[in-house]
Image 1 (cartoon, rainbow, N blue to C red):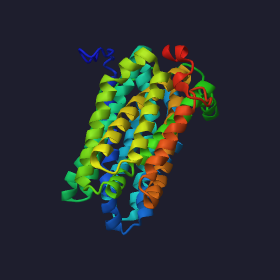
Image 2: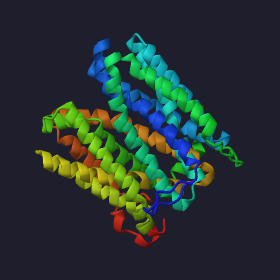
Image 3: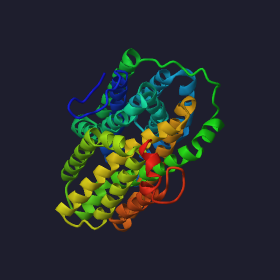
Length: 401
């Protein structure tokens, strides 16, 4: 059992530890790509639009693949689906390392994207092996894994780039190979469902249930706001603060540290006290305030304050929304619903960076304005798809969720 002594955190079963390791490895493979895009553009004489497509295409493929992965995981179990997706990711990284043309680069991104659609199965696995009272902390750690990967990945990639652009992708290939072995040996196989097989249309019906639908809508808006801002962070700070790439990296690292601390020490006690629904609403409120502050931040300390406020809000909202979704989904269809959730997240990752880049090109603070608008709309959508400030609505019911 896993317990953070002295902080009052819930004990977690050992079964979640291997899945955190596999998630870290998978996400590191993706984040290695981020700083290499300009190098690939120069090497293959690609356009900026093509560079954006290198990030959009995997997200698009994940969107298409996620509901399928989720439904299959309900039928045959989570572990085989996770391993199959990891094999696709490995093939994608290897093809990218060996590619000598732009066509092969795009093919590799398609293959990797199809493998990346299995996060719904991973999220369902966490829900399968934890009790309801453990789930908020379990998803807080899950979110922290993503935060760590997005800090470490670009730094490792930048270091390995000195020995050639292919080396980071060979590193990702090796990492994924180790990850597959690790998953096969240490991730327990969950018993597959004995329920009637679920079709894609039934999965969509399950996701369209009022209690589930509202969370998915808010999740899309939240992720859209985050990726719109984060994907254009370096360009934004360059235009507003005129800082170097290294300084921007330090800001991102500090933001990740703040978010990680909130995930580990703040979200679970807060969710226990006021419930997942109200915790997610509070996170959306704080992150919206952070975006608004960043719109008007024209000097260092003001920008830092806005960034910290945003990090606290985002770290509070993300695991709470995920926990709320797993509670609302029917257990027999949880994998399918989480697969659709992953598709929703991928859809946000397709449109957010491109729209944000257009905003930065017009006026840099507009990217924060767009994120604030999306996060604010999510705040005013109740978790049962009703419009209204849900933070103060049905507080007694929310506190019990």
